[in-house]
Length: 189
Image 1 (cartoon, rainbow, N blue to C red):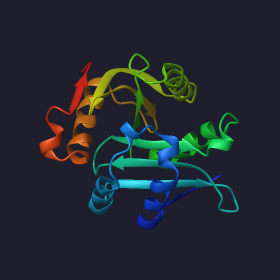
Image 2 (cartoon, one colour):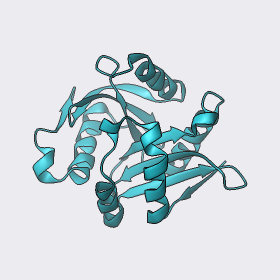
Image 3 (tube, one colour):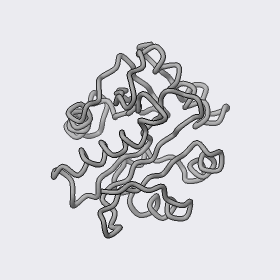
């Protein structure tokens, strides 16, 4: 498996074709916001492929300079490849990719208590935990959707209190000021 950063145009194509199938509509930010983050140099859309260049998975990250954590904004395995170990291998490759720059990769998963499909939410959390992530004491509520926050150690481990500070900093860049207040809330820090 190989990992590569994709162009803005490839990112937009994947956004229009794959993300609506892989994520609930409530979790999809407008592409104009992704474009803003790409232009700011803090968004890294990654594609994971086989040796022939065929897409296996994708992982889109928000990475701020001089911060010890990054946020895995979107991660999905091609639908027909799920359940066969591709996701675990892809996540491991993303972890290795991040290890030179950050200590932890933050993962937000829809909280099972409020998810439209609680079983799917529990499976998703279980996948990340089996892949080496740890549960944190943190939760977030972003534009009405409740998330549990996990941390995947890449090059070390950051304490929960620091993770919360860094997640707040990530969101201050991700969500423009007038929308941040009241729409991005953190608990457990």
